[in-house]
Length: 102
Image (cartoon, rainbow, N blue to C red; front, top):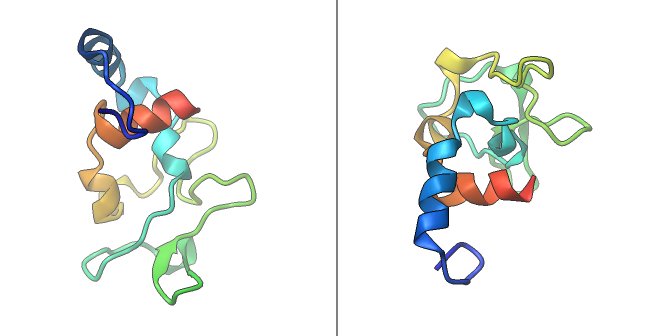
């Protein structure tokens, strides 16, 4: 089953997942809301408080993460990126969903 509850074509899924790399992607995951955790060391100017009082990565008016370089589509704080971003697995699961959606 995929994230939308539909059946997954395993051969098609395998071909798609092996074709997706961070360097070949348009930073699809950088439009998702990223909740920061206690160990995250993100510069404060790149964060904001959400409506529930949690700290999240700030997004600009275009919907993209404030830490994303708009020209290169690379993270400007890669060494200090949040744990959620570090754990986001390339080419599978939610990555595939976001890649296809955009």
